Length: 527
Image (tube, rainbow, N blue to C red):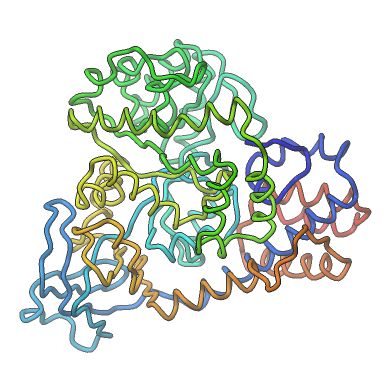
């Protein structure tokens, strides 16, 4: 994923701190000042998120005369009223009989369709604070972060307190792997280390345990065994050398990217009878089809780069994505381009035996051409194209997501007592999942973002990310830019804003290398 030592913008969030020592050696002053320019832009995004979070608060309200989509039954129920109080659904019933909404704000739902908020079941928070807002713009009201750290737990606390306007966060512990991955993962090489990691993550408050590609079978078994004892699910990759049938037998709850079905070592489909192993199994599969965009080159990549949603990504990212588009496809890239058709083949085979799917994207993890929120709709488009009905497609991002995380009592359907995470649509999603992007309003924890609010947020993101004319090369930060960035970030810190620790470490290092020692010290204090 990371191809150069130069810290181009889309890399900064993902695994960047493991490049610090290399960057000290090989990054030029020009590249460091470009990196500072990136961080200056992102400090404006952080400030935007903070200000938007202070503006919007939960309300008590009623949506009248709306068609409610039952995700469990796959049917539309017309002429309903939904009353929301204290961030939860209080009443659901026929509009004519609703008596508990007197004095509340009324939202006219005539001609509209109400669905549960969408869930992206595979994201990373390493990227930009803009991903919180972009997810909400596209109806994503819950996410599952697949590599947790202390700062992601603090971010979850800020969301739960109402201090941060973002999707609800469900967070795995730090990735467990048998080989070093810098700060991205914790190395576990013995059963004892694996068991201890599970206990530590459970005690720290993480929601899941995540395993990765490289792991000895005995260590993997010890992790699953200890997780069972601790009452916490194991999610993630099927490690190399572990059969699908064994991962299912040992109790791994969700499986990402069709790892194990597709062999990492050869990037070919396994010869194991994974269809029989998966049939009837208590397991959820997260294909992450949409990562195919990272491997596009040439005209295909340029077409993706020209999609309207790219205007909500940093122009700095787009410069680098354009360079990537112009690169010839190496044999490795060509091999990875075959992952999508292999994944679609496996999906169709498993669909025939009733396998259970959840929708996730891997957004926020440094992949090109994958703006948060928008990319979930691409994932759902592919699922419908490959055989799911619109109702089944919707379930992957709602009721299935809740069930896969053991959170069915919290969200996934529109029912009294559940969290008020909903999306108001102008077209019927049971006719075509493309209608899931026809958004009139997004409701998260009882906070109403109507179309005017959503458009305003989008415009403010574009004001930072999409200047006109956009520079053709990455610009550098001036001393004034650095001083304003430091002032902005210090103020945000004083108000409790949660920064990504890896980014703080990197920014402090770059400042020191560019002869800003006092500023570097101030940034280091933000940890």
